[in-house]
Image (cartoon, rainbow, N blue to C red):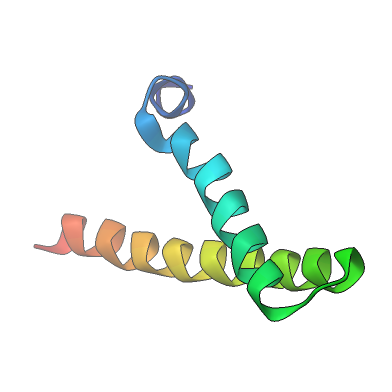
Length: 66
């Protein structure tokens, strides 16, 4: 519960609109129609969250080990 409260008060909430905006702009530079833009943006959001989650997990494990 403490971890959840810490996340609510942290600046990590700025990540959500930032990732959405970057994904939509990146999708719009590749396509012109709304459907393909949203599909490409969704794939980019998933890729970014997976990549950042993997880096977070690695750093989290290393913080206990080092």
